[in-house]
Length: 270
Image 1 (cartoon, rainbow, N blue to C red):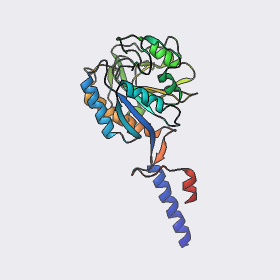
Image 2: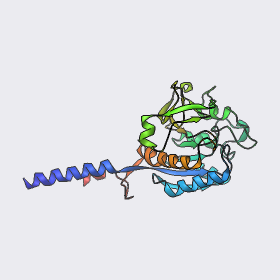
Image 3: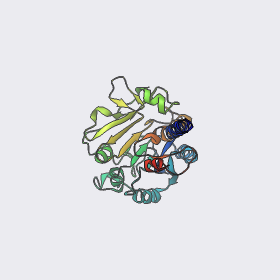
Image 4: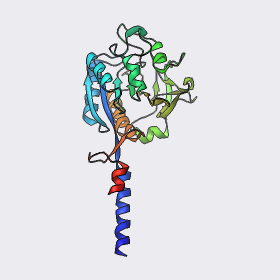
């Protein structure tokens, strides 16, 4: 009888421990030296807050133009989900300005390795050295989807159930550059929609995923700082990293105290 009680107790404790463990991704590189639709000082404050508060990544660091290129190359082929975050400006060191290298850029190789780009403020991949030199071609080339765009001034979006779950600080608001999820083409799909418009076709924040490569593109508040303030962005972006990214299938399970990664083989052997 005592053996049965001990066995049940161990099983219960193991179940509780597993259910409370969170996941971790690889590294996060943030570029905030150049921005669009948000001033560099505000972008840097948001970036510094993420460096301090994000717990779902192995490391979170801020890089300059050359540094973000080194980061992208070092984290391509490492077998982890890594993230490059931008503030409305696509670094020309990873994607030559003016769509000069539409295929095979450092950025595209990083994305197709199963990594993620996350952008806030102006249209992702659009603005670079020389202003809007990439135009709509930046997104189209990165996704290999001709014609996909992000226009949509003053598009009212409503928080979804996933938005409430993963971004509790997120409220209904008007976005200016939403993802047109109705323009996605296979192998791309909307993985998680945090807020969406009444037509069900325009979303922001949202994560879209390439089912073949596991590459992801995420946007959150593609709108000016006058429309969504710094504090709201900081809170919601932190929640995105800690509450959502920690749940993706590729995240390595680790316990809340930051102990060693848990493997199923290790659990079975205990």
